[in-house]
Image (cartoon, rainbow over all chains, first blue to last red; front, side, top):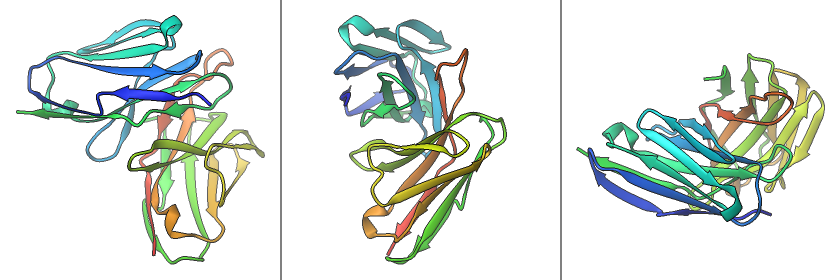
Length: 108
Length: 115
């Protein structure tokens, strides 16, 4: 099956800093999504982005499908951005494979 | 939040007992999923459903069964719970567009402890 690797595994920032999270995958995909799991465990869908670039407020994501990676950018980070960010990919059908996540801590 | 609820939200049970977790959705989505989340493993797919009575296995399906008799309900059953099934279980749906699977949305999760 498809392998998904996220980096870095942990990231600590001061409020206001910018960050880039990376997701590498081992095979071609037709589905790629980014999720945020907040400290209370809730999983929120951030982007559906199998290719191209999208932006939503301070967050943006870019997927370069031909090179098998995706990047999630967080600008002007806030303490509420803390949590775990997951990348999930699918090569066909309805199944997604999740990476192990990046644990982000934003300090005030 | 895509109208997804899970019950119970927390459960403690003993090894060898049967356990059923329920996922309920209110928006008539065709695809539903059960995942488990464990430290160091991210989320792993247990089973999924692509319609009433239509289900298939995920990557960690051993020891689990599912049923979907109505569009809105997807049940996950541990026939004989083991300590290795202690985990947080998430239900999800896919919101589809033009027949393609697109974004997945998750329920609040169920914390299961098997003693």
